[in-house]
Picture 1 (cartoon, rainbow, N blue to C red):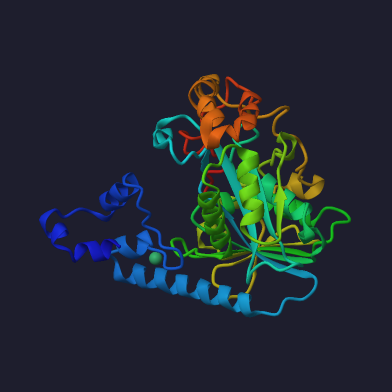
Picture 2: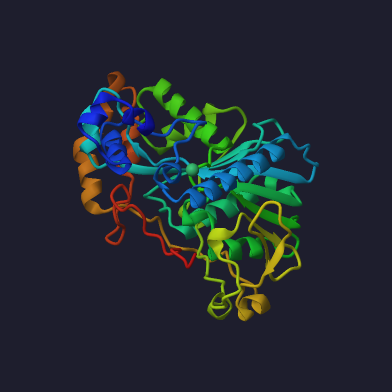
Length: 382
Ligand SMILES: [Zn+2]
C-alpha cells in the first residue's frame, strides 16, 4: 500500500515516512495488513541490501517449510497446529453507537490453535476466550492458556505436537514457554514425546489461525451487536466448523517460574533466542533442541537451572486467588455509559446481558488493559 502511495501525486506534494503513513492509516481505521499478502515493515524499511536479502530468504524458507508441513500426511499420533492471538476485541460492540470508540469498554482475548491444513472432525480449532476481568495477557497467562489448550483437547493424546507461531512477540519465544513445555513433556504419565515450536520470519506470519480470526470478525459483523464475553464466545464457536471452545476461569492461569540458568545464558557460545527457528522439548531430555535454520541439524541447548532439572518446574500453582478484576473507575464508566445502551439496543433484546457487566469485579491493582499495551514480565534477553 505504501509503495503504491509513493507513486501518487499526493505523495509528491507531501512526502511522509512509512511510519507516519501507517499511523495515519490506523487513525483512519484503514488496515494496512492485507490477509495473505502481508505488508512487512522490515521489507519496506531495511535499507541494507544484504540484510534485506537475508530477511527475504528466511521468510521464504519458513514459508516453504510451512507449505511442506501443510501437504504432509500426518500420522495418527501427530498434531500440527498454528498458534496466534486475535487482535484484542473491546466489548460491547454496538453498531449504531459509533461514539463507543471513546468509551472505556471491556477488553477480551482470543487465543487460537488452528490446525494446519484446515479443521476436520478429528482436528478441531481450539479457541480460548477470556476477558480482562478474569485474567490479563502477560507471557505467563498466555503460556497457561497454551498448556490448558493442549490438556483440554484432543492434543493431549498426541505423542508429537508441532506448533507454528508468530516470531514477532516475545510471548511465543522465551525461556518461560521453553520451561513450561519441558515440564509438560516430562510429567509422569503424559502422552507426549516431543513438543516442537516452529517460527515464521517476523512480518511474514500469515497462517491458519489468521483465517480463523478473519472468520470470527466476519461473524461479528453478521451478528451486528456483540454485547459481552459470552456473546463473543458464541461468535467464535460458530465462526468456523468444529471449534473446541475453552472458557478459562481465573484458576486456570498459573505461575510459571523462570526456569533458565543465568550462568548458562551468560555463555557466549549459547544460541540466541532471536536466531532460533525451531525449539523442541523431548521427553527424557533436560535440554531444549534447537535449530537456527530449517535445513540444519538439531543442536542441544542446555538452559535449565540445576535445581529445575533436579526437582522439576511447578506449573500448577495459581497465579491469583481470585479474578483479576478491572479498575473501579472503568467499572463505573461501563455501568453509567454502556449498560443503558445495552438495555436499549435491538429493541431491548439484549437487556438481560446487562447483568454480565453488573457482575464484573473491581480491583485496585489491575491496570486498564485497553490502555496498558502490555504488562509483560517475560521481556527477556533475546
Ligand atoms: Zn519482510
